[in-house]
Image 1 (tube, helix red, strand yellow):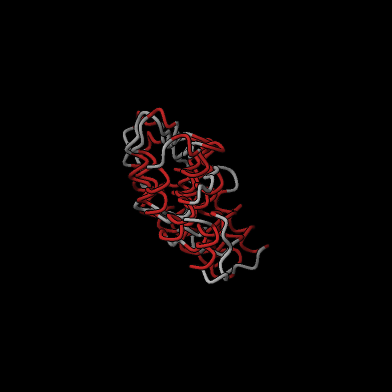
Image 2 (cartoon, one colour):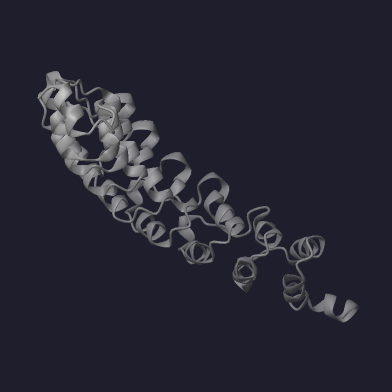
Length: 262
């Protein structure tokens, strides 16, 4: 099929380059372009994966190697971007390729997994976690805990300890971040973990983060008796930040303060 015929079929309203045709996601036009001998460079394949054109990705992967399709190009950008945009079937397709195609789910410090966690891709995360040998869910400071996606946090915490997921990493960064962002359910999950998991609500500045952002329910969780937070520091923070409801909650927990000032 010549470019002239392809142009006629497209009624001259569609650019004829394969890069442009991919954007429309029409596998028929892609087939026509391939018949003209269009070169499939790495950017064409990456774009198809990024846009979620599953059948086009399958078609390109089935081309002979000499046509230039490298699914691992640009540090496995096809896999990383398919994961970023939640294209589960394309990710599965790439992971199932023979090892000699070079697809590496560990690329860019496990970006495929980290981004899937951060964006709440609950179908993709289990798929990537199954790659026990290749994918380290503890990489890059447990980014999954920062996502605010409760189900994904549970997935990570349910992994065997040998997988290395440490909810107390980087001075309890996961707890600090979730307190600051107001992820109440995740804060509760972290605080209820067994003590051997290392989560410590007394970490410096923790309750202040929750108070500064007005997360009353999280403050309430941190004030449970066994948490051991500094009530006076918390009260001072509430007063300075004008958090009246939290201030009253704290005043009620300090007997001598009530006697002297209330």
